[in-house]
Length: 166
Image (cartoon, rainbow, N blue to C red; front, top):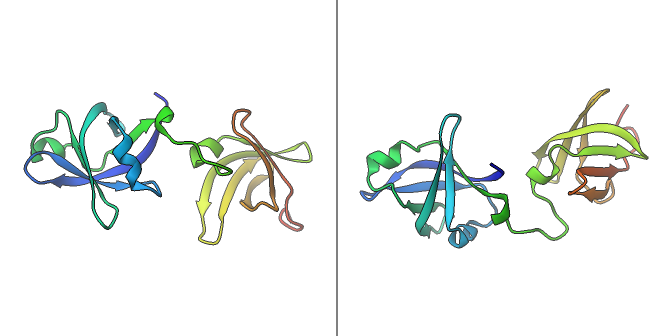
């Protein structure tokens, strides 16, 4: 299944099987547009229709899912990932989701530097961790460095700052 993690189940809430979800998105309101989610861990992958979505002032999401009707049933999903289909992810303009970047081949002047294996959030700007034949390279995610991103082609072109590979 081609899906994206959008939250983590924290705990059951109330007596009707509602779950509290920590959203892993910058806009929790997106949950209100969803019709279904998947709750997954290493062994279980279950699809649920969404009956109701509430969002508190702190941005926590509360989901009432079809088929989960008691606190005991909801407790079984504590710690599970909340996932959605890739098709449910809204497109971004001039930005990319981490899952779109991870696995890209990274080049400088047609020389393969390696594969982007993860995105590190540093506060000032993200950093792309690239693994290649010469080890790991941390590339700042700046317009002055990242010159082209081809999501369908899984390719990124960069111009490294002087001294980065030293």
